Image (tube, rainbow, N blue to C red):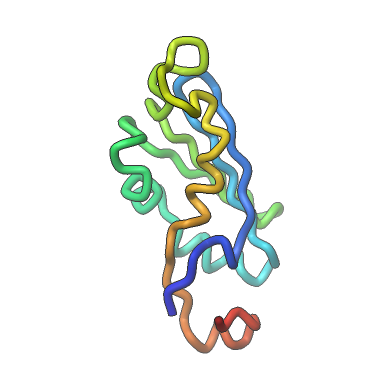
Length: 115
């Protein structure tokens, strides 16, 4: 089953210079392994194609059931020099929640995630 991250997690985002920082937090501990398996740095880079011009780093925070992503060269130079509408990357978390991932049907049913 394909499912938007919106149904599996919540997110926060911000900036540090020209790097967007996006945190993805599982809504329930049982969902974290799915996020860990499906939401890779490569997939996040592809999701932000044309926006993130540098590499994407992923950090795992299993004690928080969370993943943190750094999207380098993703803010047009950063808040004070960027001409982007969202120079601080505040909407990047919401944008990541639109990404779709595969959730096995049996796991989705077990977790009550079937749509």
